Length: 164
Image (cartoon, rainbow, N blue to C red; front, side, top):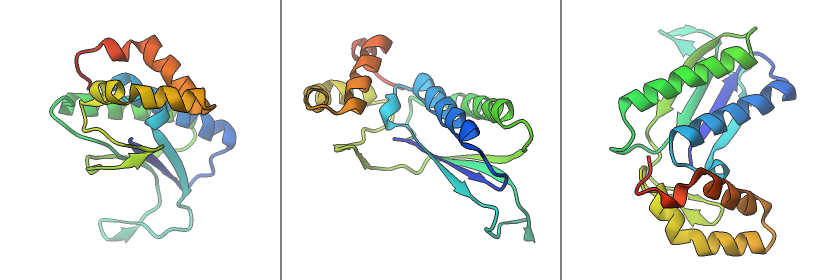
């Protein structure tokens, strides 16, 4: 449901991209009730893109995340997520500065993997409402949905009263 776009001017190897994608997926899915299957991460080479800061040409690595916002997700949640994302970058790509991280609460609606997205904080009810369809996809051989069902059971998401 969220989409993290890593805009990099420094080359990132596959050995860096893979753990960055994993870290962002884990951080978002553990902070909120979003199943891992619905956390998206993309990488964009910005080295040849003209970017300006204060009206002057500047180059820098940054991350922009389009997320769902709602009353269940506080400013403190977002600030903590920022700190955790920056720490993950510094651990995985210590030689390159992360110049900016922008959490954009602009994800109003969406459709992913055959399902419309729930509002922020409504993940648990959405999981319950779509459980049968998720099981059907898993039984039909969709490995992503099979993995998601295991994750949801392990995390106990169906038993929660509401999501975050």
